[in-house]
Image 1 (tube, rainbow, N blue to C red):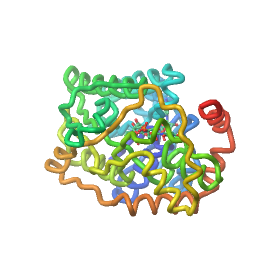
Image 2: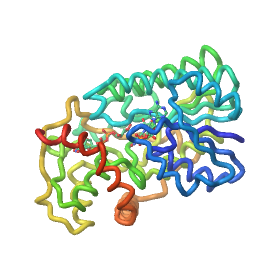
Image 3: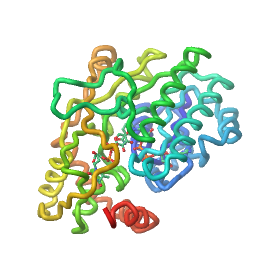
Length: 339
Ligand code: NAD
Ligand code: TDX
C-alpha cells in the first residue's frame, strides 16, 4: 500500500504521517508538500530516514510535478491535507486560497483519474456549514446541513468538497470527504488561537482575543482526527461525507483563561481586539454517522489534551521560536499592531 499525504509538513498532515507510520508500518508513505510558510521540514525530522517514508517538495497545483509523482510512485491512496488554512489570511488575500484549495484539489483528482487509485480522501472542515447561533445549543452540524460559508477560506474548502463529489458522480472516482472541527495539539502553527496564546503567554505578550471572546469552537485533539481519517480509509463508504467532532464546545475566552492558568500567567495579559470580519459564532459537530457506521469515538479529553499540548510547546520551544522569529513577525505586526 502506497499512500500520498499532501500537506504533510503542516500541522494535521504531519500528525497523520506519524500516526500512519506507527499504526501501519507496512505502508509506504509519501509526503507531497510545497513548504509554504506553514510547512516545516523540521517537523518531519524523526521520520525522514525511515525506509518506507519519502518527502517530495512540490505544489499540488503543478500538474506536471503531480503527474510525474503519480507515474513514478503509483499510489493506492491519496489523502489531501494540503491547503491554505488560516481564516484571517484568507480575509486579507483570498487568491492563494482559491488556487491551492480548489485548483490544487482538482489537479490531484485529475491525477487520480489518469493513473487510477483505490481512494482519494479530501480533508475538509466544519466551516463549510457556516455557523450556528450561540443561543441554540440544541443545534449541530450534520452531514445534511446545507453548505453556507462565511470566509474566503471556508468558501474555497466548500468548493473543493463539491468538486470531489462531482468527480465521484461524474467519473466514478472513489472519493471520501471528512469535515472535522477545530484541532489542537503538537506542531500547530502559532498563528492559530491555541498555539498563539501559549506562545504569547510564555513571552509575557498581550493575548489578542477577538471581539468579546464569546465565539464557540468544538475542539478535538489532533490524534483523534488522524484516527478518524484512518478509519474512513479502511471502512468508509465511497461518495460519502463524514463529520468528525467530539462534542467539546468551548468559548474562546475560556480557552485563553485555561492556558493562562496552566502556565501560571495573569489574566491581565488578555487584550480584547477588533473582531474578525464575518466571524463565525459557533461550530458544533454531530458525529453520529462516523460513530454509528465506523465506531469512531474521540479518546483524548480536552482537560488532558490541552495539558499535553502545553507541555509539548514548553518542551519544543525551538520549533515554534524559530517560526515566530522569521517572516511570521511581519505577519503578526500587520495583523495585530493596529487592531
Ligand atoms: P497547515 O496550514 O498547518 O498545513 C498546510 C500544509 O499544506 C503546509 O505544510 C503547507 O506547506 C502545505 N501546502 C499549502 N499549499 C500547498 C500547495 N499548493 N501544494 C502543496 N502543499 C501545500 O494546515 P492544517 O491545520 O494542518 O490543516 C490541514 C487540512 O485540514 C487543511 O485542508 C484544513 O482545511 C483542514 N482542517 C484543519 C482544521 C484545523 O483545526 N487546523 C480543522 C478541520 C480541517
Ligand atoms: O488571535 C486570535 N484571537 C482570537 O480570538 C486568533 C488567531 C483567533 N481568535 C479566535 C477566532 C476564532 O473564533 O479564536 C477562534 C479560533 O481561531 P483560529 O485558531 O484562527 O481557528 P478557526 O478560525 O476556528 O479555524 C480553524 O478551524 C477550522 C482552522 O484554522 C481551520 O483551518 C479549520 O478549518
